Image (cartoon, rainbow, N blue to C red; front, side, top):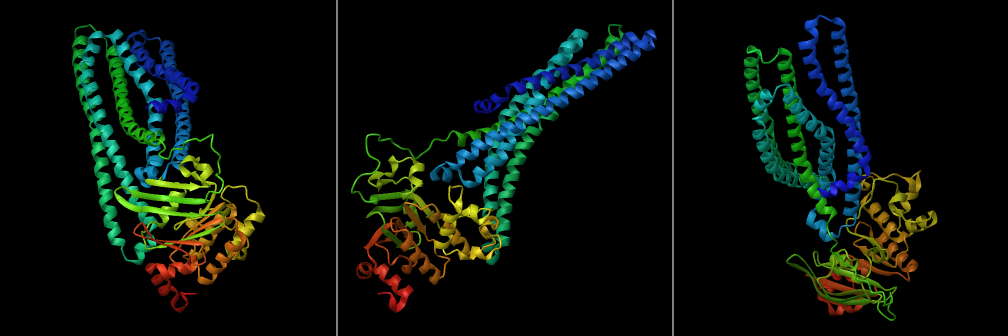
Length: 573
């Protein structure tokens, strides 16, 4: 929770002002029963109407001041909680944006979404409740005890006997509820994951008539989330009844003792009425305390999960070599040396070695799951290789700042993403790219369909580019990669949705316009890579073939059979 105070610190003046106002308003509430007791015992018996009116107006004034000051303090509390949670969300989103792929895998997308939404909401509610109720509950409770002690210590002692029981149960239930809320948040993560999968794959689900199956799957995680939420809520729900029980026992004892004192002439009616009013105030203060603890339990669990992300250390370290040149002469532009990588216990790549000179094109082909996309991820240092070295211009990618490394690339991945924005913004993507460069990129990517819209590049896309065909979306992601005039162009299955004619035109445009750009093409089509300067064939994470198209036709059976199956009689051409 210490990290939370860092977000509260910039608002300490506002918080202090609000607490001061809250104190004044709460004290006004405490004056009202005291004034009522004076009116009943001392003013009314005199028959002085002016005095009665004066005390009545005074009580109304206290009530109005209490209302006004509490409203102002609550508004300030809402403002502070909103500003704090905005800062927390900003830092959390920024941290998530820079998390390494392995860290994202560890947290999971659904959990990160839940932390950014549900957990931050719980923290905001906790900040709000703590400001609105903590000081008020403390003043009402302590002030009520002080005033009642002055009025009648015997009645106060009767009430005070119940407080240790209330404190014990409140603390015990709170300590038990925090881990329960943590479990509830984990169940919410799982629920978010299932909903995310269903909304993303709704077309496949409908096409395969799996709606009923998915409904059952959702029902299972939903029931588990409800079970954990119910368990947490039922635990904290015991607080109010227990407090009410002990307070009512205390109140009954106060009434019995008070009646005895009145009968013996040792107390007055006004004094007892005021004491009962203060008892009600103290009861409300204790109920506020339970609400504070309930909110704290949920908020503390949420802040713990948020801090786990905010304080996560990067797993991709960069070592500084200030005495070495940033580019080594005569070194290959890209070089893999005995590179291996595993996802957990599963070996994905094993002893991969190859090199490319600047301006050359590399084609990568292989079976599904052979490690083609993983190889690209290692090159861009989305993950770190388990063993071996990956170098660009002779410098190990681990020795390059991540931003410097990735600015070298223009990339298109298998499941690339389009935002709900204009075509222009999706291609430019926040970079300093002129309209002329934008038009060139769209032309090279064979995205002439953009000119068919009356708005041109300002045409607005739906979420995930839902108002475009698969081939149109792929051409826009290609334009995005080309627009930055990258040093290394990575096309990971980037033409799978294109027809052969468009694919051929795209390859020709890349060959003619990116002569100094090193290009890496990952594809299932032999036709997309056959003209590459160097081709590697992967199977089961191993390099089973390397060379030109002609060389592989002679030396690699997998490549030869794939070419024959795809290209028929012209596969030798």
